[in-house]
Image 1 (cartoon, rainbow, N blue to C red):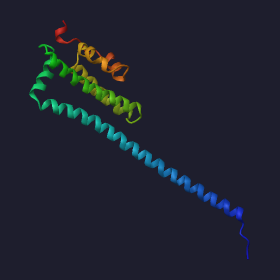
Image 2 (tube, rainbow, N blue to C red; image 1 turned 180 degrees about the vertical axis):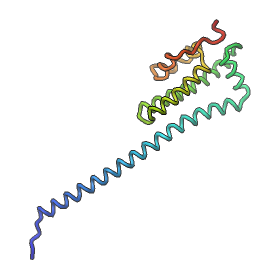
Image 3 (cartoon, rainbow, N blue to C red; image 1 turned 30 degrees about the vertical axis):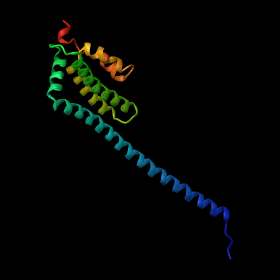
Image 4 (tube, one colour; image 1 turned 60 degrees about the vertical axis):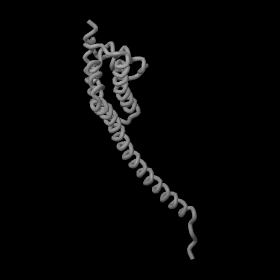
Length: 162
């Protein structure tokens, strides 16, 4: 009868174990990559849904639409309560933009996606905000990426700032 060479058998088992670990790590890496893509897609959907939700709430209420239009135009002064509501609208959108930038900094968004969203929010800010509006709500965004982006934008004066 042949004697079993234990050191050789141990070496073969070690090689088989090493191959098994490598194959397992490859599967884990594939799973992480797939999951990262899904998380990125979910983040984009969350931002889009937040934007849509705000717009639908405003569009469904004629009083909100009136406040929004007058706040944007700045030609007819808003009451204190209306101004608060308008500022809440601005802050809600800016908060979405701020969260989006935080997701991008966490690596959950591609650079080209961030550029597209930034362009959207910058156009929104230039349409709905004046420098006076930004001064009123800026305190809510200390040291944020959105603050530096808005500071760089020319929001212009509201029509009543002549």
